Length: 119
Image 1 (cartoon, rainbow, N blue to C red):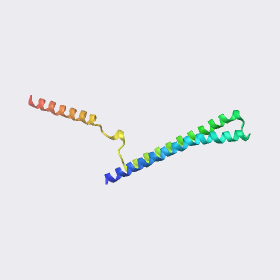
Image 2: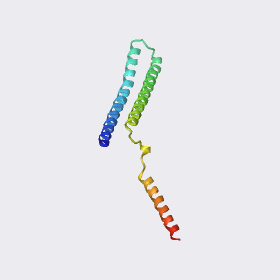
Image 3: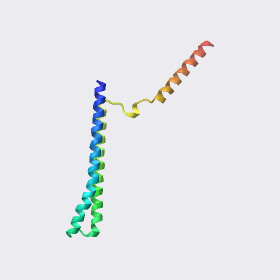
Image 4: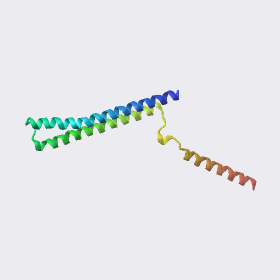
């Protein structure tokens, strides 16, 4: 059962990563498209050339804000899903060094108890 959950989490993570990368690629294209559209507006006289850069900057800023909001929504959804699935987080997992330290401490305690009982 846990192997199936792990495969599901790996698949979901992979799919999420691909989605985010796709979104970031679209964002990069969007800046180019925004610049092109604004340039066309300038050529048609609908936007003054001195206002063009500000317009591009404002539109790109709005896009970045939306991208950050999307990233937060995805992060929250993944965290909620993983919480529901009861999957351990990285900070919940004991490292090899922590295990070694715990074992050393327990062995030290046992040796001390053995020495105390011998006296």
